[in-house]
Length: 367
Length: 122
Image (cartoon, rainbow over all chains, first blue to last red; front, side):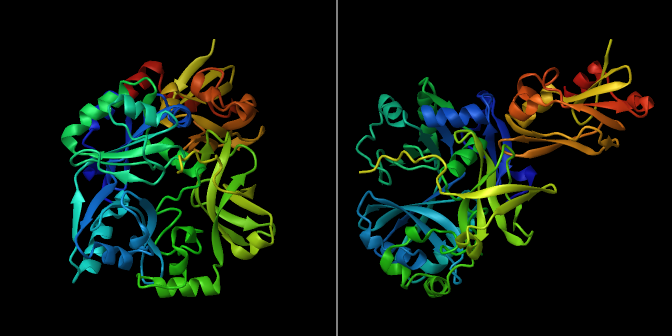
């Protein structure tokens, strides 16, 4: 997390500048936050047409070697043997206490090759952690320099096809290498159908310009990326999930294969089994505030007698929901009792209701 | 004829017969982005210069709007309860925030005129 003065620049900065982006710092990167259309239009455009996101701050790794499977099975609560070639999976890096160090997308590319996508803010610590675990394993870990773009929304498939990249054979959470040095997967962080596309820096300007020439496509900044993922109920690491939160609390057990929930050889397995046996005292839930006023990350939650009930971890306005939306952690006993909950915002108590996630339906193209 | 003043914090104050109408500038609304909620003060509230008088909330963040001078709130822009985006579309007009009775008109002397403000934002 560098100082404001030493932010890393995106390779396609020149395109964002000419599109009129407003930049801001995010986990050590100078990122386009909004474009002149504004967060509201950008958000809605993505849900209706196709939004183009520069996510080159995220880090791709190649894992390659006879022990690649073994390394992944040690690092993550994941059974790589269950992952067929071209299949992707959301998984977690856990510490010894089953706290979530990061969430990763792992794709099998071959018998002994995997692509791993890590969050920008954790890229360095993830790499160090993986290298530590890889000691004594025959598996190379190679961080990749790529421009990473996401095209999200109902028009994404057709736009890419018109740009010479037919990805219509992919279903949600499938990926492959369409060209030398490229990686494409049908996945994303918006709840919409869409793709993530990594490519060598030398190929990127041409590809991005080709995509932007399509009238169905516009640049989408980090602000709308955040409101889109929040409506879709997707976690932001560092906010909704952290090294102090277990998958049990985070309601992310579904990412872990059933047989591994009762133990395994992965880091944190014992703590996870213990956490499941004890049960979580707090759980991540969707929260919908009453009225129009957004409640933000960090806002305390209280019960009707003013006692502590939890905390908001992500909150804002959902342009598609047309209302404020949030998620956060609430004490399990209060969830079970369907207790009345309030967010304390600047001295006011705003009633909030537990709301199923996502707030807006997912539109994934499943096989 | 009202006289309009500007603050370093990107508010405008239009003064007419000892009553000031306060809003944020077009530059400020553009910086904030799409507004989704405006928390207005209660009519009758006594404000001192520098008090957080209003909270404007964009999709992403909440920001305070400060009282530029001392005085009592005489009216608030109720239209913003249903249509906070008025601040985006008409920051210097229909998107005004509150009106206040000035306690001390000499406080206006330290504020900028339009030319001064335009020079500040460049």
